[in-house]
Amino acid sequence: MSEANDQIQAAVARYLEYLELGGDAPDLGHLPPDGRRQVEEIVAMLELTEGVALRTADPEALQAAGRADSRTAEQLAVLSTSERDRALLHELAAWLPPGSPVDLDGAPSGFSLPGLAVAGSWTVGTPGGRVRVWRVDVAGAADLEKDPSHLESLDRVFRAFSETAAICLVGDDLSSLLLEPQDCAPAIEVPAGGVAARRYRRPIQPAGEALAGFLRELVPAWEALPRFEAAAVTALDVTELARRSAAESVGIQQALGARARFPKKDVLSSLGEPEAGGLAEMAITLYEGRRSPAEIDAWLRELARTR
Image (cartoon, rainbow, N blue to C red; front, top):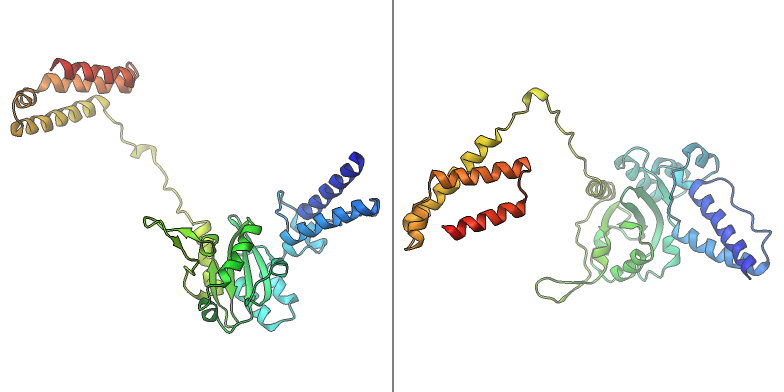
């Protein structure tokens, strides 16, 4: 039994390598019937979930092996036989960053999606997870928005495919509704504590615009940091800064003392240059590492006690 399990694990490992790196699919002919059946079941699950590539493959090698995940939306549009599919893929190609990986998506065939007829489906690979783009057999996204019952079925898709960042439902007119996991799952409202119903949170948008906007949210474009010129760096005089800050702090306490009651009034009003100098010395010794924060705390407590 152990040897048979080892053979099954080795066959699955070879198939994972094939999914990640491409090339020829592994031959299962050497396995006994029961072992081959188990591997085929596991392989079917891997095909359904589409795997998650753990290593970067050579794009030329993938293309030579006929792997669909090395193609772009424009390449898939050329191969498509459906006019509506071609229109959507051209829309994606116009809005997606150049070279964005697009693959056929087999997920809808594995789920019961009542009232949601998926006519074409693709995945778009992003650094933040896969975005599933599904062309639904409706005139427009407005028809979908009227029925939130679809969200329960889509919640099961998100839970089954944890790498899914979003699902974009597209109508025949290329209008779309983009959904995230939190849109399809019930949630606890704060502060009421009640259960919030599933709902469409994003507005209806053209498919390309909705997808491009979502990708910008996943990977925001950061502005380049400005160059720091050495000549522009201003040296800080820690001693002067400490003395000025200490004097300002003592001045604030003196002003509070003018409005305070006795005996606090006498204590605050009597603060002056000696106390400001002591506070400045504390800050300087802390900055230079001659005293620790704990020692400064004890020093302040002792000063408060003696005053």
